[in-house]
Image (cartoon, rainbow, N blue to C red; front, side):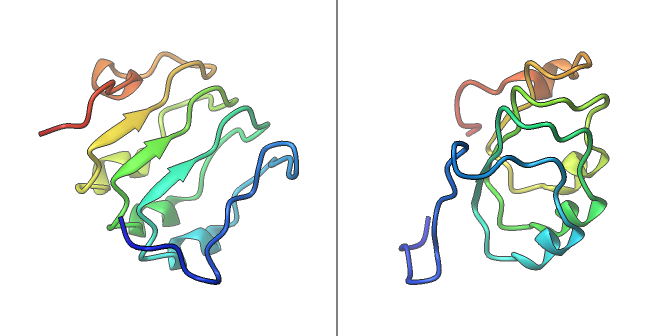
Length: 101
């Protein structure tokens, strides 16, 4: 992963309660790691399929009612966790505990 620059930051769960993700997230083309847990989010925008540099995706412990359709578009993913949502994720996306070789 690249170095952290002056505009890179982490928003802690205690600081921000998410209820939706704006479609503009698709503009973050250089994003490599995304972790959103314990939110009230019910679904995600299809624009997330544009995050081609994303290698780590943790969306566990949310309120998703179905598996995000864009997951198959993210061919660079080496880790994904969709466990503990309101549906049964497919076995390959429930929790890839190790990075994929």
